Image 1 (cartoon, helix red, strand yellow):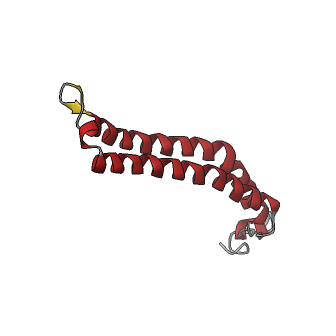
Image 2: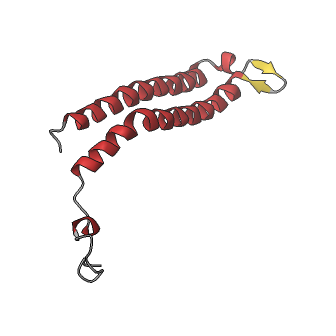
Image 3: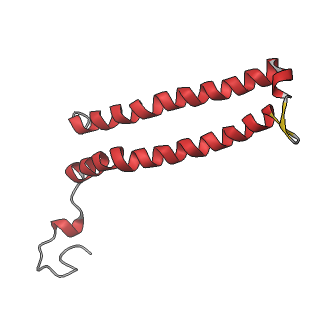
Length: 111
């Protein structure tokens, strides 16, 4: 199975999505941490009411996490799952029920 071109496609497609999105998210998080550490005045700036830049950016960390999870789920359903399902069907070992003759009794089929 490791030599199957479909597996290579599955792996490269997964990496093509996961690595850039992970790097982007880590940079976004690092920006938040660095601004919190070194730009106190900027992060303390009031946007409206008692909401400041730091609070908004902190909340956006959660929003971006859930958005990335939803984006990945959609990506996986459309691009990864069909390839994985094909691999599963082509390389799966036959089950006991598939090996038993059609007219065999349950005891003969090993059930």
